[in-house]
Amino acid sequence: MENERDIVVKRLEQMSRKIDNIPNKDQILRAVTQLRLEKDKKKEILTQLSDEVAALHTAQQRYSRLSQQLMEIKKATVGATPQSLMSKLEEEIKVTEFIVKEKLSKDLIQLKRQHDIYSRVSNDSYISKTSVESLSSKINMVRNQVAVLLEKQKHTQNSSNDKLVPFRQQAAIMGRKKDAILDEYRTDMNKYNALQKQVEEKQLELADAGALDMPKGSDFKDYIGKLKQRNIIYKRNRALLSGLKSETGVLQRTLDVLNTKSVQLGVPQDAEALASLSVTSSKPIPHDTDNREELLSFVAQVSTSIASHKARMLPLLDELRPLREEAANVNAEYEEVKKTHDRTSAILETGTEKLLQEVLSLRDLKQSAELERATLDAKQQIARMEIQRASGDTGQAMKEAVLAKIQDRERLAKQLKERHRQMKDSQEQSTRQKLLWSNLLRLLEVKEKALEAVKKNEEI
Image (tube, rainbow, N blue to C red; front, side):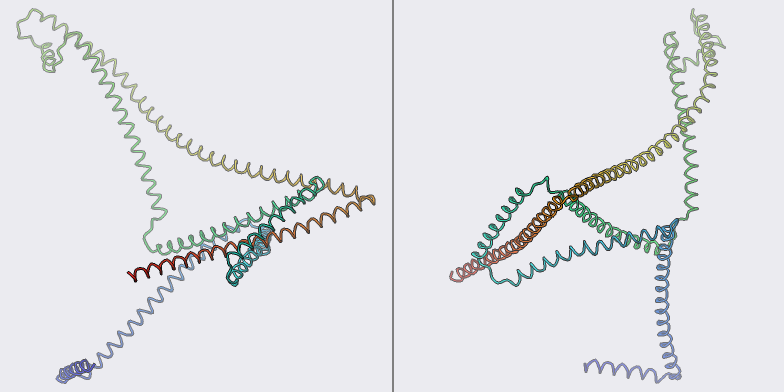
């Protein structure tokens, strides 16, 4: 520290010596201090400006998000009435009340039971193997007793006289359906919230990217128009190319036919020989030969046949060109019709899928309605029988006796279920405790083996 202090003092002395020789020392120092203050102010202003820009950017993002939400709300409220809104709110209130009263209460009870089990396990003292075996034997005994009692109840209870069994089964089925629907609703709500967050993130990203040069709708329309023009030019050139290919094929076939005929007639295939033959038609042949007149007549016949073939082919070619153009137009129309057919078939497939889904939903509704109707009929029959029995004194006494028996059986079944549940909880607790102690014993055995190995190594 002292060395650094000395170095700083020396530098200050050097600077003071340099400044002493300057005539306008005070003015320069004032200007320097003023410049430093101005720079600090400039930095503060720049930081304030950056903060304001960031705040403006966040405000713009919030404005865009809120405007998007407002547009979505407006779209959702199009065609809405107070009655529909009230019905939606009532449905939401019913669903939330059901979730709070039944589903969440059941979950809370289950969590409390788990907490009680964990607290018992943590507060229990050491459980030996003998105590675990005794508990397991007691559990088996109670389980056997419960099974015997259930068998006795099944034997004593007549299924034909028990009229409340189908209603209980139906209530249990409806309860399970409600639980399943609630689970699906919760999963769907979680998915919806996750998707909503993703949509908000994408909207923020789009708002951030709004400052960049994005293609507009007019640019996209111009691009599509250019693509259509190029497609038309491509189809036209393709039709011309196909016409030229077919014309070359026809000419090639005519050339092959003429070559075969010339070979049959003995005309030379070389171009120079054919040229010499064409020259001989106007000039005398210099070679000495006896068949000069025959050759001249043959050449004249060939030329006349070629001219006749050309005369025959010209009208055919004239007829062929419009046919080619018509074929190209027909191919283009066929492609357009095929595209429209594909689109309509896709639309029809989607429509049929929707109709199938509607049919399945209607079938389910029909089955549920039939089930409700059957249950109502059964209830009506039961009510009629009860009314008939209640008309006389004997029927009333029998009814009271049956109801008393049903209540006794229900009370006994509840007690047995409660005992079974308690034994099941204690069994789970004891099995968990057994696993914990077995793991602890294994750890202790491993530690003992490790200590013995260490002792042996030390002795060695």
